Image (cartoon, rainbow, N blue to C red; front, top):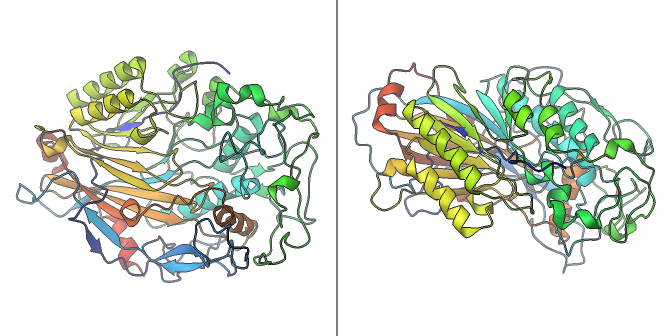
Length: 565
């Protein structure tokens, strides 16, 4: 795969995303109540309220109303041999907004010139990691290299993304998102077929997440994760912007560290460590005390999946960075290229700037690729430093607010000096309000307050969201609001995907996502309440506050999540 200024788009949506989200003694709970009239069945044993044939009559629930909770705790329970409740979920209590002022904005300094008004309404999805688990170029016995070498739920990765898209699409009927952000690791192992499945889900095509033999481990249609399904497709009216993660550009997300251990992905033979998964659905659960509910493709333990011979498939070929970029062009969804431009293709560069992300609102999106060629952690080297600094200067001179997006955030930059340099650069520009990313597979909100001697407007919020592939498998809605008094707020709302009545196959995947945590595999990425439903306070630069005061009023959609019962 070619080496290049990696596609870890820090999409600096110059939008004053300066949010305040972390542990603060000044946080206040805001009652969210119930979020939906129907409530939406989110447990694996119950029906759901999603109807793909008609528009929803009420908003789907967010986690303000109810969460998807385990009947047993979402933690390592492997010391307890009783698996009776593992993987089972039920509707849990909702979580109200917490109001955070960790950037030290304090009281408004100006007399309000109008009612608070919504500026941007954003949908974030991250870390779907669509995988061809039948590939011989995997390390399912390599847990000493990476804890994510194998996941119980990995056969359902295409279906997880599909269920997430269907859920988000249902919110569009009430208010369309201004745009969506896909913040990297949408595929797992730089395979051509993984990239094709990702784009087929986004474009609403028939998706057949299978390779080698045409496997049907559980006879019938759409009852096991290898059956083809008709994707609904990302809503045609909503622009979505992409930024690449390490799994989109490097073998198993690690590149040269693991590549020598991998077999040829297109071949029929694995290596000494590189094993494959042969699709299997048992007639009943492997463990006597494992719950048979919900009805699903019952999986054997990982050690039963090791295989040294597979059916070859040329569609498993490794892609390179150019292939990743090129796949975003010619999509049936908008915009063409999804942030990437002809310049991206010409120079194989994954960083870009999208001006006028919402016409009439002075925000710019800056996406910076911080994927390192040397492994899973991000990098902010001198070339990236110079590129980002020039774009931030341009935005400040143009009087634009900035949202930065990338797969890696400050937390996942490996070098401490590079991390400090990156955070200091964003602090330097008061028009940066937020940095939105993924990678850690966890919900986390971190305030990056202004350095000593700087005004509060130099602070910004770092927003990370949990992975679609791993428990708790959540998305985040982000709404930026102008209070019309010199301050702004960022509403961050966590959303669980709903299980459509005509797409019950995904229910088995949710079961195994929780089972994976409880059996000692992955760690839950739920975070703490301060990382989930929060309202983050920030300050506008004066010249921006004056410009925003001239904009027409827009209703704050996030408040409807509380009141539209």
